[in-house]
Amino acid sequence: MSFSFPKINFQAIQESIGKVDLDAISKSIQNSNPGKAVSEYSEHLMESIQPLTAKTQTLISTQVAQIQQLATAHAESGVEISELPEDYVLLEKNCDILLKLYTDLIHYTDETYATPSYDFPPGNSAFSKLKETNVSLMFTNKLNQLKNVATPQDMEKVLLGQQVDTPAESDSAQIQVTPAVLPKTLYGRLAHITSEHSRELSESGSALGFALLQVSSAYVEIASARLDQDKAIMTGFNSQLVAVLNDQFIKVNELRKKVYAARSEFDVYRASAQEEEEDEKLIEKEDEFVSAIEVAVVEMRKLLTPSTNVNLLKVFAQAQKDFFDMASARLGGLITELGKVELKEDE
Image 1 (tube, rainbow, N blue to C red):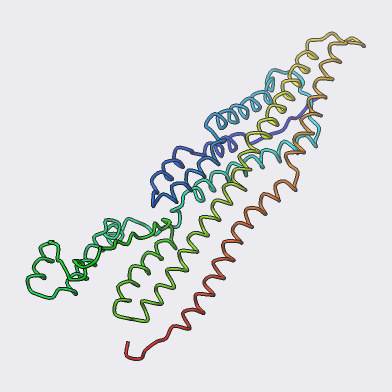
Image 2 (cartoon, rainbow, N blue to C red; image 1 turned 45 degrees about the vertical axis):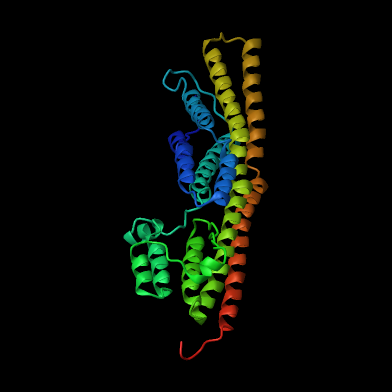
């Protein structure tokens, strides 16, 4: 009599677990440092993904390897292998699929939403590098100083990089405006660009300068809302996936190991036992095997409960919807505001 046992793609599972690279995530977060607020945000996200340690990954990978080894034990020894119930085999298959789904989602949400600058414009162009080194700002300041010179001597001082004293500066205290630290995101960058040019154009009373100021204000709000979305995804979705991985998956894997270990012990003893009508030890081994299956089935069904996983997907989708709704409403308001800007024909 021949028996069959489940064929499980353990290699695919182990490969998917290996994708979660916390070192790379940590470095990407540390390299994006647009300011104190964003730094604190990144630290918070790092705390949320801490439970998924290298130790956890190693443990799950080891468990998968052990299950594979136990499942194929005695396959070529001639020992008759007990057949597992079909519903148990199906539960195992679905748990393996769910494990791969969880590890993929954790990996890609870590790679994206734990890094504030994931939608930041590419920084490898010469223009971007020029902006990052503040050379553009230096030229802007130089031009502003040249516009305000009153004498050839003052112009010479500006060109030589010397301080030019004006009556306004000597009569009143100098006021330094410190620009707000903007998130290193797409909309944060757009807010910076529009704000910078708004100041330049506003000096001449241009309506475009006022319009750019409104655009900048809207983009700052959208940039902040995107960070709120990321935080909601990491704390309400990613961290919950990690919690299930650390708790339920590890527990289920241990129970699956017990099933295959109990089956192996039962099969080996049965092969060596004398054909007696009553063999109490054989009955004991069989009971242990059946009991291990029953316990594992209960926990696997808990893990595969649809409501739990669907609710997590709802959290993921809701965080994105809240951001897009906010961005859509704010952009709609911006369009209305821009429509009210008074335009002069001679501008």
